[in-house]
Amino acid sequence: MSTPVVSHTSDQALPARWRILGFLGLAQLMLIVDVTVVAIALPHIGVDLGLSRAALTWTVTAYTVTFGGLMLLGGRIADLIGAKRVALAGLLVFTVASLATGLADSAATLIGSRVAQGVGAALLSPAALSLVVKLFDGPERNRALGVWSALGGGGAALGVLLGGLLTAGPGWPWVFYVNVPIGLATIVALVVMVPGSPAGGAARTLDVPGAVLVTLASSTLIYGLITAGERGWLTVVTGVAVLVAALGYTLFGLRQRRATTPLMDLRLLARRPVATGAFLILMATALMIAVFFLGTFYFQHALGYGALQTGLLFLPIAVATMVGAHLTGRVIGSVGARRVAVLGFAVAGLGLAVPAIALGPVATAIGTAIAGAGSGALFVVASATALGQVAPHEAGIASGMVSTFHELGASLGAAVISSIAAASLLGETLTGFNRGFATAAVVAVVGAAIAARLTPGRTTLA
Image (cartoon, rainbow, N blue to C red; front, top):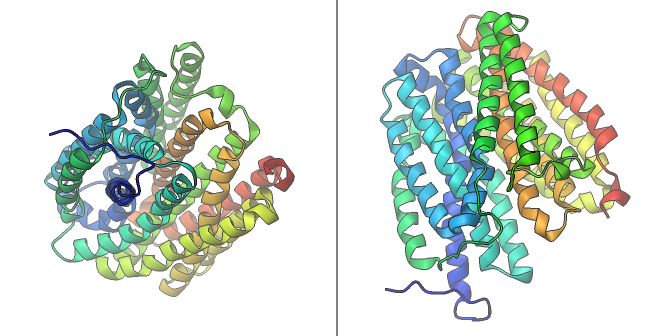
């Protein structure tokens, strides 16, 4: 049976395009949800499998490091052999890995399966976005990309609620099992509905060494940051890990200059708007993950709240993030990116300072919601700054770079905050929570100062 071709000009085909977008969006939503949904389940996973603090942190970072490190390679593979094939392959890998993660009975199996999920996500996400761009034209494309972008905030909200419902109900394995029927149904729908996507002519070789270098460098850096929680920040192990990571990133940069088809155009990253956008998205994601990581252990370990109650307490954070993003989208054109970026960091820092100073259930819930609003503003400023002035043929590479820094920010946020609050995550004291929130607040203040210097003003973005 031949695959139907979706025409841009046919009115009859219009519903088909939007149905395809619905399934592609559902697939992308699973990838986003799989960061925040795990945060609620972490304490229960730790108890059931007897995981150490480091293993719990790797449960988050193994996924985000692999996702971010291999995402640009996934985009190149989609260019080489066709977006539809790569999207289906990534979705299949992610679905099977989700089943394996739910069945995990040890730290090694759990973390290995999370790595496999990251591989599937790195293939699926750029390929799915490529399909969206090819299926829509003109004003319709803008509407479709708007829906696609909205999945970020919606995914965070759905993740915390779904994590609470599933962990409190059938148990934490269902946080991962739920991906299986959704993934299989989406695979069938995309096979039938999506037109074939011929390979593009841009990429004829794959920079596998570059992808390996950046992933290993990130993993080494995360290892050093996580182990600092037990060994200390000024130890040989931590120092060597940071130095090896720096060497890995340097070699990656040299590789990108010499590769025939590099994963990352470093000339783009040398541009002030793109570099600033990458910095903003890294910081915003790190702050958001720090809030989820600290909050889930504070509410469940320190206060003894159930997973569902914790999920409900996190909903205001997710809603505030979406509200902050929405309001920023409406005013950034008239106010300017620099002012909004500084304000976003200031609001995030103010919110994080509340539980740092007066740790308690009410203060933590209110403070983290305020921080969420600031983070939501930063997400919009980051995208607008990084992508506002790139040429059309550079948009795909620039978007991939921003997404890569998004995942790296999640990894760094989880690793650093886990080590800073190590004692509290193990249930020994509450001071780690105060220290963690205070550190995040200071980072937000420093971010505001850097953003004030680096972020282009309104006239620059116009």
